[in-house]
Amino acid sequence: MSKYLQIHPEDNVVVCLEPLKEGESITLSDGREIAAKEEIPAGHKIAIKDLSSNDNVIKYGYAIGHATEDISIGRWVHTHDIKTNLEGILDYKYEPNKEDIDKKISLMGTKRATFKGFVRANGKVGIRNEVWIIPTVGCVNNIATALAKQANALVKGSVDEVVAFTHNYGCSQTGDDQEHTRTILADLINHPNAGGVLVLGLGCENSNIDVLKPYIGKADESRVKFLVSQQSDDEMEDGVNLLKEIIEVASKDERQEVDASKLVIGLKCGGSDGFSGITANPLVGRISDRIIECGGTSILTEVPEMFGAETILMNRCKDEATFNDTVNMINGFKDYFTKQGEPIYENPSPGNKAGGITTLEDKSLGCTQKSGDYPVMNVMEYGEKTDVTGLNLLCAPGNDLCAATALASAGAQIVLFTTGRGTPFACPVPTMKIASNNTIADKKSNWIDFRAGQILEGRTFEELTDELFDKILRTASGEKLKSEEAGFHDMAIWKRGVTL
Image (cartoon, rainbow, N blue to C red; front, side):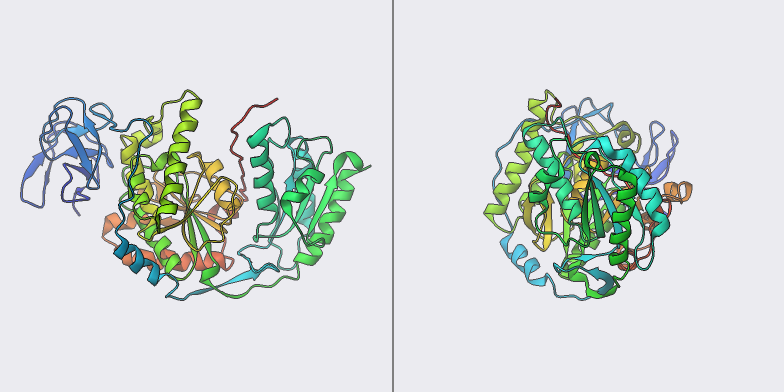
């Protein structure tokens, strides 16, 4: 196996597939032999051309920053000798390949696959039949957790389990911040993965049940029930009785064969490394394309991790209106950073840097590969649900829990989460961990669901796309993921405003 990977023929750096010792050589495809001038970790970059200070460093065929000093062939290229090229809010021009966009749109929905899901009364399809407890405010979190623990002893029939989704919000919030909390809670209450929901309130909170009901809309009274704790003599007894009623109804639900066009997948990465943009992310991009070809929907989020690769997405927008929505999302997020006094183009996290990702462009060019090749069909605000098939962009931060929860609230029944360093978390919907390298897959086999690192061992993208797509269909049909087996369920709401 080769010791390196050159992603694009114009790249002036290559990625080391294994650690290189000082003096150890690699042989390039053009026959040149290059000796490492220092120790270079796996997943990190080595220069294959001499670079002068201020020269662009090219990876993926794009600049990922510029050299801050002269870099000779064989040198380690990382945070000590590269700086981002990115700067403030930009003007953008729509420069699409309309012929390619039209061709891709014509292919949407031309393939067919099926899975076994729970068809809800509104036509949406769930891939789980859970009973959720949604607190309206953090004050009742412990009650929600205690109720879930008791009610799980009552689970029967097709009900998977009872889950309490605790959070810290619902009161002492103002303006849009409070509105976003209400919207996210209402989205989850209406989520098709929930066969029933107990909405648990305190009674004196800003987002109390009476306030929240208009956001929820018309709900099936046999499946969505409400409990105001301050109005109950014994909220535990009343809560368990309501959950019994919900379980009784939901337990009779049955899986049935449904078309894969009903699938909505969320696309997310975290704890990335130098292999994420080479293995896991482009693999998930191929899955996004496959889902769209079956008439389904994918959702890409993490707006800060689009910075530096945003023009690629913009020029894939189906029309100029969608392009303008994307520009507003990108520049709006930059404005959000500026108003908080934060730098727009901060380097990636310590874990990302340790894994070989140097600049935000480096991370973004790898991150956006999860979107595949199909056109951008729709742009969503935070808390908005999608009914648009194809690739959607969603406004949400890069934070793993916030972004994954936002994907669930937007309608994703499953989140595909690529990682090079591993993470145990799960969001409100099944969260499939896809490892970019086999080292982390072997070490954290209790976290990882799929090994994209097999690509580094000679497996093809075509083979792994088929295998991963089959696993997604099995998961949608009821097969549990590692985080589900561990009983992990998390949610986090994006906090954006003043707390009173």
